Length: 301
Image 1: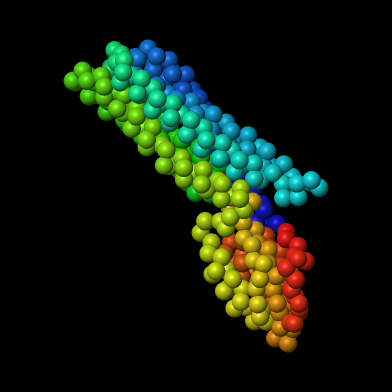
Image 2: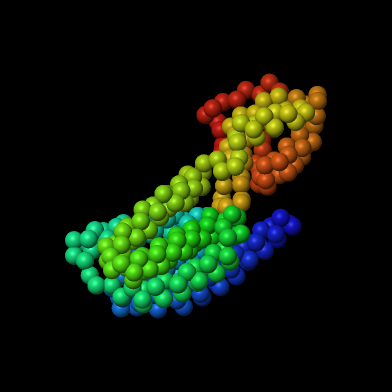
C-alpha cells in the first residue's frame, strides 16, 4: 500500500512540474514564433519550432498522466499506466518530423538567402534561453523517473541548445554580415536532435515490446532466485515494464519441499525481487520436485 502511495506522490510531483514548464514555454512560444517571421531568421524559426513542440509535448505528457491515473478495471487489469509510454513515443516521432523539416528549410535557404535582422534575433534568442533553462531545471530530476517526463525534458534541452546556437549565429551575423551562418546553425540543430530522439524512441519501444527494462540483467535475476534455499530450477522467466518504474516479473520455480515450504520460498523470492531488483509485482508458480513441464501447457501472465 505504501509503495503505491509513494508512486502516486511521484506522479503528482511530475504533474506539477510539467504544468509550470508548460506555462513558461507556452507564454514565450507565441513571441518567439512572431519574432522568427519578423527577423527572417531560419535558426530562430527552428528554435521556435522546437519551442512549439515543447509546449505540445508538455501538454501530451500532462494528458498522459491524467489518463494513467484511471484505476484498473475488468477490461484493463493493469490500468492505463502505459499511456505515458505511448506519449513518449509520440513525442519522439514529433521531434523527428521537426528535425527533418528544419533540415529541409536550411537547404532551401542556402539556395535562396534572405535578409536577417540579427539584433532582434539575438534578443529573442536570449529570452528563449532563459525560459528553457528554467524549464530544464524544473524537469531534470523527474526525467530520470519517467520516460514521459524524459521526452518533455529532452525537447526542452534540445531547444535550450538551439537557443545557444541562435545566439551565436546572431552575434556572428551582427559582426560579419554572414547570413549563411543562420542556415548552418539551423541544420546543426536538426542533426543534433536526431540521435537523442532515436534514443527516446528506442527506450519507449522496448517498453511497448515488453523487453527487459534498462538496468535489469535477467541472468542476474535468475541466479539470485536460484540462490534461494529450496529452489532447484527456474524456467519461463519473463521481466518487463508496464511504464517507467513499474517492473513486472513472472516465472515458474521447481522447489524441493524437503528444504523449505512453498510459502516460505515464495516469500523469500518476492522479498528478494523487491529489495534487490525493484520488482514489486511478481507472479510466481511453484512446482513440486519431479513435475513434468509441458511447453504446450504454459500460461503466461
